Image (cartoon, rainbow, N blue to C red):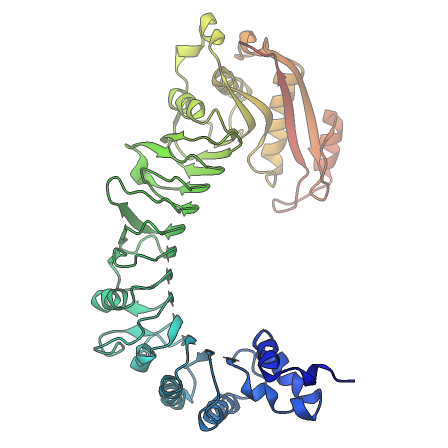
Length: 484
């Protein structure tokens, strides 16, 4: 017995609202009463990419459906359309797009979402797009946007989400869009040309901002961030600046640069930011959970935080590294669980810790230390000497497990120094605090580490050939004597 069909029409329409357009169409075979019910659902979602038919058939399907809604004066709350405008039917598609937007306006649609794309970068974006008063989400890909692409008066005052990808847009036009669409909450700008400056001071509701360029040789776009409403900021190959004293009370995810106060910040990533070289950065982030840094210099960064359990990951490469500066950085991060990677053996070794009384100073516990080994055994031992003077790693490994030859050398050096206790230049005062050292290995398909003699490691690596062949992971676990 079909009890669903006996439900009130409002409830049936609500059911259709929450299913996809494809599933709504399938309901036409349920019974005679359901045959045309899908044509009256309060939301329409059309996607050319998922339509099973030719472009002409897709255009006719959308056009006929909207015509029926208008002619029958049906209620339409939401309209979603994803369409490409780069084929032989481009002009017809643009003409129909204008017609559909006018129909939506006369029907009083509450929310419309539009995604248009083209592979021809000479195509001008249809100006009719910003005449859609109900437009709340707009995704534009591949078009040119100049003064002819944007009407004198922008009617899309309710726009909440703007995504521009591979769009060449004049700066004046971009500013006009932002000034006219002050309700924007999400703005993503990817690989867009023509922009030299972005100011978001008019977007008081902006929560999610992303700017990305793939070519670091392009002139950098200057990005000025203002709204305290921001929760996510992601910048790639752009110069970002903040007002002095700016506070971002809602910021949760920051994927670049400097600011003075992040009361809600939980995740911070700083990669290859040379502008921080001469800056002493103090970050007020009471709720920080994870900090990642990657660069060719040791930054001066410290955190003011109430977090008791947070992690920091430091990746240093391709530069001379000072142990003095590294000591300062590790101490500033000592309340976190530290992972340190040093892809460099050119370390400046100051003599401040090589005196006997230097070892009485407290050192920082590091959860993992990974490094490379392109040097002699005596030089490698002296590097360990300097590192062990400023930190106590619990686990040590090699930077690149795919480089079999270097891994073999690294393991050989570590075995002789830590297991067999060959002295070389490594100070016995440092090893005096090392109570136990073991080698552990794990195949790429295994979850657990297990202790292994040197012979097992040699056999395991001997079975593999080629640089890109997955190697078994190798690490040394170190147990240090507790010091006051």
